[in-house]
Length: 258
Ligand SMILES: [Fe+2]
Ligand SMILES: [Fe+2]
Image 1 (cartoon, rainbow, N blue to C red):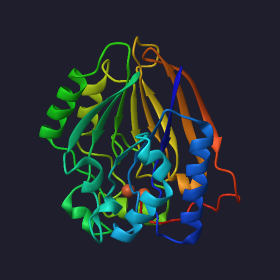
Image 2 (cartoon, protein in one colour; image 1 turned 180 degrees about the horizontal axis):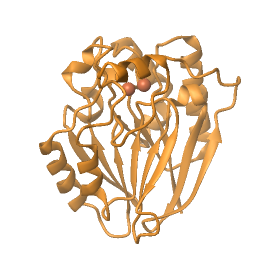
Image 3 (spheres, rainbow, N blue to C red; image 1 turned 135 degrees about the vertical axis):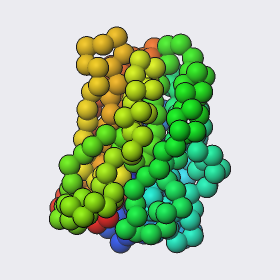
């Protein structure tokens, strides 16, 4: 039996409470002894090099052990634009790990430099690269696709998002090619792990099918102070549980840009 943890939207550098929550989170992840941690973007709050260094310092035990995979989020494209550090500038990569095949998709774009243009980008070329990455999945491995932005509609979380949607701005909108991505994954993938939206969510596509597809949003782990752990064996999910990050009670979800 192996286990992975999904975390997202750390927003390091937002304030001291956020950075403290990240330190507690790393300790909790080590305590949980998961094989792999998958982090789906907005690692930094303003894309600053100093925020990236803080992330590397806090999560060094997991990074040095090769147990942490990251995709960038729109906030990582701001400031010093630190997004290349995790995928080397590639849009799609595949990682073959024991019992786990991870396809990483960079759904960010240059327009994310602007805080109010936080929506994602997925191109037909990205979809084709995802199909090729799925081809590399070995049998009896759990297949997980990581990306920052959500591929299917989710409700607005606060007044700013409701206003943005009212005026037709795409900030809270799903990826336009999200449905096409999900169609490409059905029957070939087990998990879609994303963030961007700070409230957790989950959906199962093809429930009852031989290979259902779970679309899971970790939310902002430094705000929710909890993370999903998924246990798997021979390519099948065995158990899902939420673990809490010890420490102060989580504050109310901030109405900050996702
Ligand atoms: Fe985001
Ligand atoms: Fe975020």
